[in-house]
Structures are given as C-alpha cells and as structure tokens.
Length: 289
Ligand SMILES: C[S@@+](CC[C@H](N)C(=O)[O-])C[C@H]1O[C@@H](n2cnc3c(N)ncnc32)[C@H](O)[C@@H]1O
Figure (cartoon, rainbow, N blue to C red):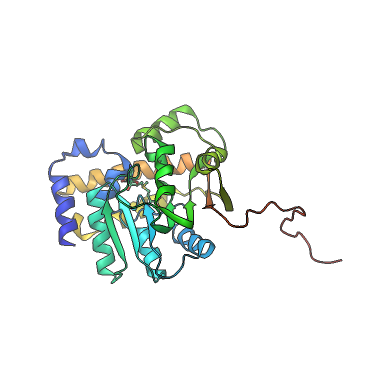
C-alpha cells in the first residue's frame, strides 16, 4: 500500500480543491482507487473466461487495467500469467498493491499505451478490452495493436459500450468532458466493424442493457469508494471535492447509460472452422408438441 499511497498523495499534493473539481473521470478513479469494473462487473469477466476458456499457462492481457479489478479477477480464476496494461501510474500502483494484498501472484501491471504496447507479436491467448478503446484517439490503431499481440487462434474479447438511441447533445458533451476523450455517438455496428478483420470470426455476441440506479444507491457507492485508508490521510476538503466529483460522474453516467447498451463480443482470428450455418436456429420458445 505504501507505494500506492505515496503515488496518490504526491499526485494530490500538487492539486488544489479547484483543480480536483476539474479532473477527468480516469484521474479521479486513480486517485481514489475506485474499483473500476467492466460493464456488468465480475459477472462479465467470468463470462468472458467461460466463453473464451483460455488454456492453462498461456498469457492473458487486459488493456486499460486501471485499478486492477478485471486483471485480478481473471488471475484469481486462471492458472496462467495475466498482464494488465494502463498508462496511469497511480492506478497501476493501486492495482499492484491490491494483487499483493490478496496474494494473487500471477498478475503483473505494466505501464504503457494501448496504441503501441510494449509486447512482442503473437504473445497472448486472450486479450480483454472493455471500456478503454473509446478513450483512445485512434480506435483502429489500438485494435490493430490488440490483434498484433494476440497469439494465433487466440481470442480478442471486447466489451464496448455503445448507444442504442441518441442522447441529447448536452448530455453527450458533458460525458465527453467527463472522460476527457472525443465521444462519438456510435452504435453496436460501429464496434463490430472496428473489430472485424479479414479472416476474423465474431464467435460470441451477447448484448445487455443498463438498469437505472437511484440517487441513494449512487450516494452510498460514493461513500463506500471514498472510505479508504489512503484518503484518511488527506485534507478533508480535498476528499470532499473528490467525493463531489465522483457523485457528478456517477449521476451523469447513469443518465447517459440509459441510452446505451453493451455487448460481450469474442473475435477469433484464423478460426479453423468459420461457420456459416445453413439450417439457422434460435432459442426455443416452447418444447411441447
Ligand atoms: C474507464 S477505465 C475502464 C477500464 C476498465 N478496465 C474496464 O473494465 O472498463 C479506462 C482506463 O483506460 C486507461 N486508458 C485510457 N487510454 C489509454 C491508453 N491509450 N493506453 C492505456 N490505457 C489507457 C485509463 O487510464 C483508464 O484506466
């Protein structure tokens, strides 16, 4: 915890209350050690592992590992080395501490840019990316990188958030400011096209929608997130500013997500049995004669 606490404290030392009130979401997540999760939380991570069933001992990568939730969850289920990559050093320090505290020793957190990763070609059997590609300036370049480091017959698991209906423009621009990245109003097809390549099959596609949260639930969650030892050492007014910023983000995102959905999609390059089916099927509505 010491390294992570020092990293967060040093970052907070250089910030006034007014600066905190202008921080973007990812920076507040790093400073507060927010348990940043993919859409659907741990269930999504476990579903990806179930669907992709990476082979024992073969390396797994999460791009945009933030404070470590997904990489640690994957490592806790796998007998394989897991790497989390993020470009935020404070988030990485918290992620590393969390893994050590829970005794998970098959996960490593690496500092780097998802658009030019410090890994050899064909390294990972599973590359997981959830809500990270939309934060990068060049989506296509980032996805080329994911495929570059993916081993032959590996699986690229993407869990993108997309719009199911257009949000009001003021809401879209407020979210854009919150995430400090250009936010296009993209639908699911945009992401399917982005991740599709010659010779790549979309082997799984599970769509979900979001359920709206009450103001009380959001307030409770902010309290839980900010009740952490490293924040007890900080001036009360800075913690209050972080709390206010988180509440603002969660309320904004909750409204925005009511226009959104997400999908668990698995892409597989070089699938040996690409599978157009003649006699198409669908889930049965009844089984009686
Ligand atoms: C909203 S968080 C979500 C990530 C989370 N793992 C999830 O499951 O959705 C986005 C993360 O992506 C990281 N990130 C954004 N751009 C990046 C880049 N170019 N390279 C590496 N990480 C990046 C941010 O630092 C942040 O930790």
